[in-house]
Length: 103
Image (cartoon, rainbow, N blue to C red; front, side, top):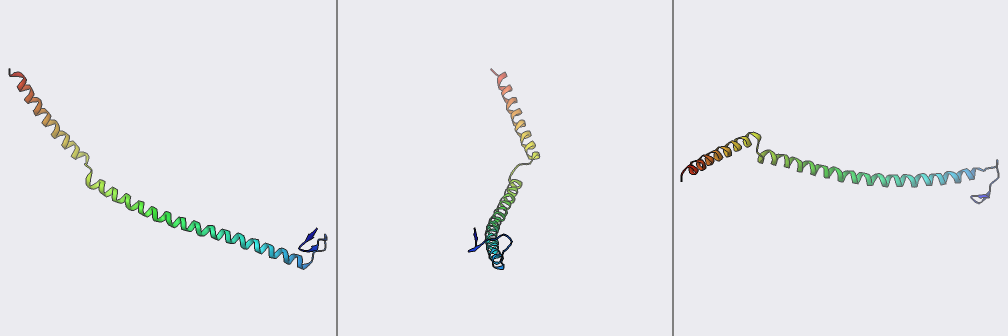
């Protein structure tokens, strides 16, 4: 078997063979670092988009909470409204009872 163009003899590895292995390892490490950096940049871009989306969602939620606080009826308002409706119904019932007695 030949390693990098030289016959490989067990126990007799020259400095040039180590140099060739070092170069290959450096190339592999550089390629791996490039892939990791490219992946990291992609993750940063995704994170930035998520942060912007979250800010928009928080803003929308705050606007919704403000709308609810301004426009929705409180329970005391609803109790007062229900009491007024029942008073009107009682008056209608009294009027109907009065008309039922008349021929």
